Length: 327
Image (cartoon, rainbow, N blue to C red; front, side, top):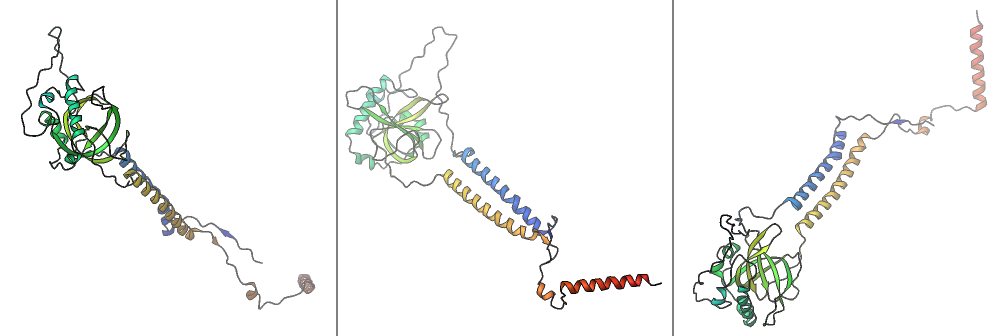
């Protein structure tokens, strides 16, 4: 029986099969690296700030001390009376005149603060739902706090954080309210602080919230708060409750990109494996001889038994010896 031998053919890097094999070996990995790098950039490096939105410096400007004046003391000047308008205010004008911007909560704010809460509590909620004035933005409220003091305003935005805070001791049976930090629609990326008397059923709370709302409430002041880097100021509004419509939870952009990346990786692995299998078919081991049909190849041959073969071999040897002995 003929033994078939085989050996590995040398790599011919100029052949199309070998080039395809190299391409499908390295190209999917390179594409995968680019895909992952793009996902990391979108997830951790992208910013949602609109460059066209005007940026506003909300840092509280403190009055500078005058070292040339001994015992220098800053005295807060009285503000002029609020302009008289025909609009309904959340509190009396005499109370609102005591409110000061660019400060935290002061004793002078207390009367107007609770007067507005009582107005919100006693007013028919339908009045706020049917309020048809044009929404205002961060820029208007931040830049004209006295013009909006105590007035009813409407705004839209996204609640980013909301938590329950206790109210100071009072005679109005107000135990607390909800403090919300809102990213205003249209920017800039600076918060508006809204205090709600109550929340709709099912409204999410906590330090990480992402709920679009519409708000109708009374503008109170430009309020100072301690941010992570310095003291900043933000418009403060008092409202009965946010107007909120629960929406189905859609996958976040990060989760969507992650799913696409995973699906793409699976497809790349599958395509790469298939392509390498096809490319390897042209570079598999090459046989030196091919299997043959022994019956067909031996059909015309004469077969001898072992004894006949030995006699013929002996006779052949004898004839050869006789030829060698002839002179």
